[in-house]
Length: 284
Picture (tube, rainbow, N blue to C red):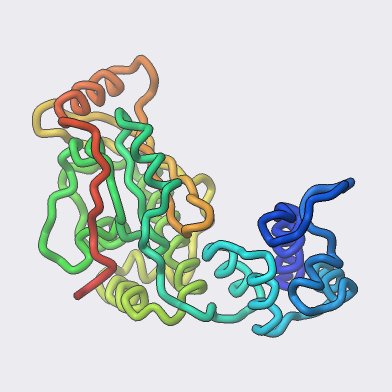
């Protein structure tokens, strides 16, 4: 199965790579992307071997994975995904935590929508002022105080309430995200320490780590208890930020609802819209 998934990923990347981005002329083409022959030339292998890889009939070496990634000039997230599908650790196993222009634009454009951007280990990297205005993220001085998984399983927020069903969905999402991150970044000591500490502190997380729940949808709702406005129920939707291996979470209220009115009141007193870099990726 992994071989077919790796082959499908290579084919998708090949077909979505513009020739000019890898130094080839565009010319007249019947299909978009690169031809197998072109990928083979760039990666130093035959077109037939590329075909066998894409069909899942040949297992690549770590060197072949690296050659394909270099040839296609993949972003970090795609490179890590290819390595994981081929069963290898990436050459650089550290979780990236730099917020790129795409994630920054999201935070800048949705000024009336509470949002944060997190890395693959679920450490918050940046937030907007509307998110901080919710007033629920009280700092504790703990090394992982900006990690959403840690705060959910080991150090819960007092002003954040979920139903049993929503909490179940939220927990499954976080555990799945961390399992995926450990697969892609096996050399990241801080991520390994986070997972080990969470497994020792939280029986629930340890159970989810050993027996994952299926993730049905990457969103759940919660009531945020604001000190001045009271409870406002928002739906959190998790969005991938391709290329940087980051994720953005948007918190929205039902249009025209009392929650939407309360959220607007909260955001109105949040001050000038701003993007704030926050967090530390673990102890130290």
